[in-house]
Length: 511
Image (cartoon, rainbow, N blue to C red; front, top):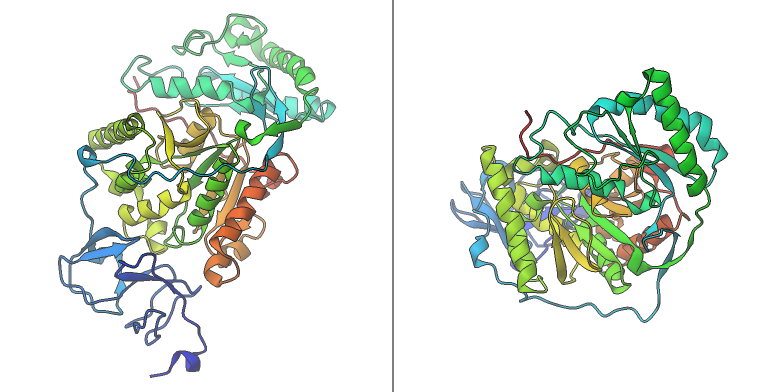
């Protein structure tokens, strides 16, 4: 059998915790059989990048441990050096919510002596924007076609005359009528639309386009009856008058928004959202730990940081409860986990529905393993608050904002919570972006960063390649966040003008 030197490959493998009995292959193209890993184990068969290798002989029922936690149980014999596929693992039960202990792992972060700032647009309510946008809210999906036509005219005919305004954003959604407006869970989409309309990047300007007969009435949106703020299409004579009226109302706001100028603001006025999508087994090795370090730096500098995705923290909830600053925060975590457990059960599903074929191809065997790698991006700070879906951010520091894990729904809810910029880690790759706030993409692998060199903003793959440390990439992300928030740097997705739809989370019945 050829030695590692004869094959000409330096094997890279990663064991995350001293208690782990598996390791992860780090080499771009995987490793062939016969290679001896850093842990001294010889591979029994070719194993792809990101996939697990047994560091011991497993009998049926033995616990498989990664990140120092049980990610499952062997459902058959697995030999030392063998490739552990997801079909070989039986998933464990989720942590019991009644047995969680709060505050047992609280490590407050020391604030920086240095003052960090960003350049933002001041708003009348004391908030700051990182973009200068005109936002147009819809109260019902029926008006989307007319508004879409009007938005294109605004971009072509009006926007060039207002160079200080970045873009026009229509808050489109499939809601407003044909729904049980008072049904169980209806408060979530209503709250989301209301809070999206008051996003700091809209400069305090409100413009609502409605039809006139919808269930989502102005009082539910906390909007006034002023003609200067609201336009109902049923009050207009034909299509042309509808469009002309929208343009006239938009022009008034463009004139005011165009006067906004960036000024220096403390980082305590910045809210950063964290999310991952197209995850792989290296997400918890490179990108997410680096983002976690950046999150700690942001919190030390006074910023607000939110992480989300209920199904991607459910199996690590005991680790988060240990970081809950107060008993009330822990109870709020439990409240959101219980709500989502019940929501999934009503749909005859559980948290295992989260993982995708791409996740598994990237080495993630199940949602337990995915969760443990996901929560790493929250860093080490105490959790100071918990938000129900779409609620506004209330505190500086680290907040858990409860959302589904779907990229578009999570991003929409984080925007409603007041997110200025989202840091998004990916191992498989996704061009996802938001129109209301920039999305900074962090790749888990160098090969992805090279393949998508004009879509990936930060390459965390250098960590496993040996070209950088977690701390160095975390500092790079921290600086990039401030630069993007200040308008000094543009993300690749914003450069290309990529914009995904806003997607509401609506658990209420549709009539």
